[in-house]
Each structure stands twice: as C-alpha cells, then as structure tokens.
Amino acid sequence: MDQLALLFLLLLGALVSVPVGDRLRLPAPVLMTVFGIVLALLDFVPNVDIPPELILPALLPPLLYAAVRRTSWRQFAVNVRPIFLLAVALVFVTMACVATVAHVIVPGLPLAAAFALGALVAPPDPVAATAVAGQLGLPRRLVSILEGEGLFNDVTAIVLYHVAIAAAVSGTFSPWSAGADLVLSAVVAVAVGLALGWGANKLHGLLGDATLQIGLTLLVPYASYVLAEELHGSGVLAVLTTAMFLAEYAADADDVLTRLAGHTVWDVVDTLVTGVAFGLIGLELHNALRTASGHWAELLTWAAAVVVVVVLVRLLWLLPATWLTKRLHSRRDQDEDIPTSWRETIVMWWAGMRGVASVALALAIPLKTEDGSAFPHREEIIFIAFAVIMVTLLLQGLTLPWLVDRLGVRADSEREQRLERDLAVRAAKAAKRRLREIEAVEDLPEELSEQMLRRAFDIGVRISPDIGDEERREAQEQRVRRLRRIRRIQGEMLSAARHEVLAARSEPGADPEIVDRVLRHLDVRSLR
Image (cartoon, rainbow, N blue to C red):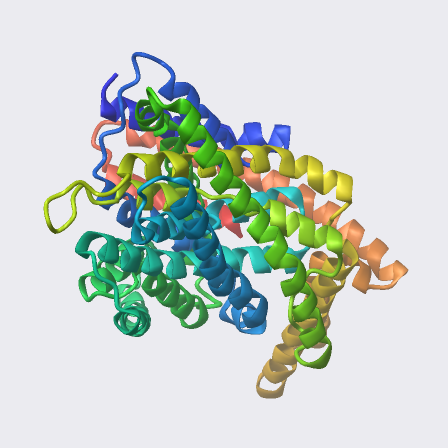
C-alpha cells in the first residue's frame, strides 16, 4: 500500500465513521483514531510520510473555519470570562505544571524542553470537543464554552510552544522578549485576519456566482493562516479573526442558493479533514512504538505521570474557576453561558481531549539545536505527548457518553423550544410588517391580501406549530398534509422532467452544457 492509497482509505473511513458513530453514540473523531491505530498495527500499511511542518497549515485552517461558522462573535463576547479562564489561563497553568513535573522526573530534560512539552499537551482539541458536544446533546451553554475554549486555546498554546522551542534551540530565554513576541503575534494575526476578511467580503460580492463564492471560502482560511505566519503572527488567531468577520458581515439573507450549497460543501470538508486528522493521530503509533523500544518501563512511567497531571490540573482548575465565574455572573452579564451544576463541571472536565494540534506540534520539534547538537530528549517528548493524546482521546472520548448518561446532563429542550418559538413569532411579524408596507403602496385585492396575511402567519406556524391556537393548528395541519401531497406530486413531475432531460444528454447532437443548464433550473425549482 502506498501513501495515496492510505489517504484514500482515511477519507473513506471519515465518511463511514459518521453513521457508525451515530449508531454507537461515539464521536466520529475517536472512531477514526481507533481506525488509525488498527491500520498502524498492520504490516502492509506504510508509515505516514508527511513533513511535520505541513500538518498544522494543511489541517487546522479548514477545521477552525468550519468550527467558527457554527458560532458567532456575540457568543464569544458574552462568554469572554469563562473562555479566558479556560483558553488562556488554564493553558498557562497546565503548561507550567507539566513542565515542572517532566523536568523533575525525566533525567537531564532541560526546563525549556519541558515547557515545550507542557505547551503542546496543554490545549484540548477544538474538533474533538465540538464533535462530542454536538453528538451527545449537551446543554448549549456547555457547547459554547467548549467551542470557545477549543478555538482559542490553540492560539495560546502554539505561541507558547514556539517561545519554548526557541529557548531550547538557542539556549537563552528573555521574559520581556517572550512577552513582546506574544503581543506582536496577536496584533499581527488580528490585523491580517481583519484585512483578509474585509477583502474577501468585497471580492465575495464581485464574484456573484455561487460556485466561485464557495471556492473563495475554501481558499480564505489557508491564505489567512499562511500570510499571518509569514509576518510572524499567529496563523490560528488570524483564521479565527477572518472567519468571525465573514460570519458577521458576509451573510446575505436573500442568497439562498449560495448559503445552502456553502453549508453542504463545508460539511463535507469538515467531515473529511476531521477524519484524516484523527486517522493520522492513530497512525503515529508507529513512531511511538519505535521510540519506546528498549525502555518501555521508564517511558510509560513518565507518560503516566504527565497524563495524571494533565487530567487532574484541568479538574482542580475548573472547580474554583466555575465557582468564581458564577459569583461574577450573578452580578454582571446575565447572558453569559456557564456550568450551572457540579455535574456539568465534571462533563467539561472529562471533555478535555487532546488531538490534532498536539500531534502536529510534537512532530514539529526540531531535530537539532543552534550549536548542532540533537534536540534534548526529542523522542521521549514525542512519546509522552502521544501517550497523553491517546489516553485523553480514547479513554475520555469513549467513556464520555456513558458519563453524560450517568450524570443526566442534557440540553434544556424547553428553553430551546421557547427560543425557537420566539424566533418563529418574530419571523411571522416581520412578514406581516412587510405585507402592510406593500399594501400601503400597492392596491391589493382583498382576497389576495387575506391570502398573503394567512401565509405570513403560516411562516411562523411552520417553524413552531404551537404558536397558533388549537383551531389554527388543526387548519395548519390540514394545509401541511395538502402541501405535502402537492409537493409529492410535484416532485414526481419534476423527477420525470429531470429523467427526460438527462436522457437527452446522450442523444446525438445534444450539447451537454445546455442540458446541464436546464437540469440546474429543474434542480433549483425542486428546492422551492
């Protein structure tokens, strides 16, 4: 089997893992990691031959962009305190604790190299957290915090990792220089992200065609990441900034086709890239086994100690952090999403799985320092990092559904239904207001006006049927049944039309481009 065949196998596994995960109530990324481990144990499967410096630029930009599309700037602004405590403060604390323990237990491990290990195992994976939260039906407040933590902790950890690696390679460290690098990296990233977001928004309007617009969104995350890194900024933060800008300012409410097609394309990209990323994590078992050959006892002892530190530090940090956030929450922003019970805090603790970023950073550790000597304990650091990733991803990922069931942590369905009902009412009122505006300037027949008024009400009832009274609900149910029958018949008619057009494609003298154009009109008509 060659590298191309292996990539195809991972892509196929990414697709299959989604329905299998839904059936087993397990996160698809965890299943893909198990699949990668199984492949790594097979003799005919080759070692992954991807330059470490390409893993982050190839995988992170689309994953981060897809995650941001499911959130909003308002959500992050409201939850700035809990996200800061998790994404920034907790990363610093975890890095310091891991570095201290590793420096003490691993003989001869320099402090700078120990901090590099701490930085690369500190950030929980945003993709794994989002996948877990989405499949287990967790409360929206927990999903918001996990998504925010997952998106922003990579920014902090990657910058700290680069500072630690620079200190280990050069043999010198300046706190002032490191602080200046952190600030400069953030400023450059935000500037690049805003500039590219603004430019992409303008270009989006000029392109016009849905295909070109969606193609632009596929390029923008990579452009943002690469440009920021070239200017010594944080590529991750630049992607987040660009994605948030476009989510806020590039949405056109009437561009239905582009929005529907864009969601489909990005769902496909997200599924495939996520599957490949976590499959690669499992495949790296080759390297870990090779590193441990000959001194398993020492490496397993060191890895176990670091795993315990990573897991316990998160719990010991979350308990007081949640308490502090609740105290501040009661006095300030009532819209802030925070855990409301110890059960939710436990779920947040156990959802702290490591993943793609940790693997990429571990593999990207330089081979040599500036004086030409080997990077201190590089193989041991990679093994320990791999152990942390495997334990947190597999143990926590596979047991999290059971833990959620035992603790009874579930989404607030009544609150979600209430929010949906409120939005349905707002949508119906907006339609009615527009109808009144049209009536003010156009002379509509009374029968047409009444019909349009009923349709305005139906807009809300179709979204949330319980906003109408019993009589109207019954009438709406009758209309829905009638509409379904009409749509079924119309669908069969359109299906016959599409079959006829497709048959014409193979006839002598047929122009495929014209046939495809007519077929596209029929497809669009089918969406209405």
